[in-house]
Length: 221
Ligand SMILES: CC(C)(COP(=O)(O)OP(=O)(O)OC[C@H]1O[C@@H](n2cnc3c(N)ncnc32)[C@H](O)[C@@H]1OP(=O)(O)O)[C@@H](O)C(=O)NCCC(=O)NCCS
Image (cartoon, rainbow, N blue to C red; front, top):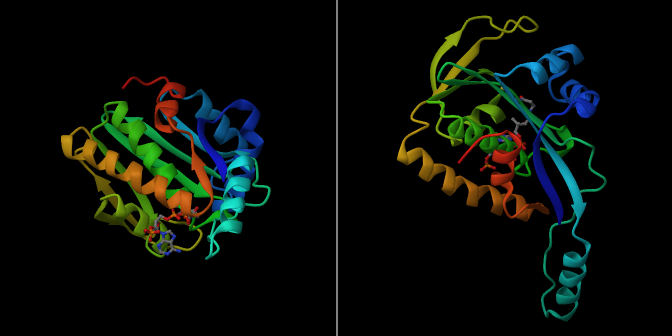
């Protein structure tokens, strides 16, 4: 198992954030763009990092597998993960969270990291007292679209030829009711789902991982 942690982007990790941006989006923001985000009081920019590997846990599992009549199928720890696994950002504008960035290092796709990071953004938005969340997504980006729909986002419109590189349309998605009791319940349910998914891929979240995000972003519960 390898530990995962979330934290706000800091100055020392700017070059890593820029490099990850290049790999995820082919250069969405410049280095200066990321620096501006650090200075903006409205920007919540979270990174997802791999921490230390839980060696004892694995050796205990190996022992169990040795004595087990049917060998246990255990997740392999990811081999030397990069400094940053993911990056996500939203801007708090009036009562809305405008989600601007969500990217996971390509070699770590489909391991539950994207939904964990997306959850972290939504939870932060909820704790900031924001009422709604919105984002734009390329119509061809089925992976991202599916992720957003999984969290209840709904298509409310389309911006024609929004992306200059391909001339593609953008779908505009919204999620309302962030301060409703139902959304709070969803957050609790998603937390379990996210933890379980990560576990099957060899990732381990800190016990109090979402409290840690709260503390690091200077939010209150
Ligand atoms: C979109 C992205 C963040 C998803 O990250 P990820 O870590 O691979 O996603 P997860 O493993 O957490 O998957 C969560 C959900 O996303 C959706 N999803 C992710 N990859 C998918 C794929 N290849 N096909 C279909 N659905 C996919 C599914 O709904 C999935 O839930 P499920 O596992 O229950 O089916 C990642 O593909 C990425 O970084 N893409 C490049 C950058 C980008 O396009 N960002 C979005 C800009 S709007």
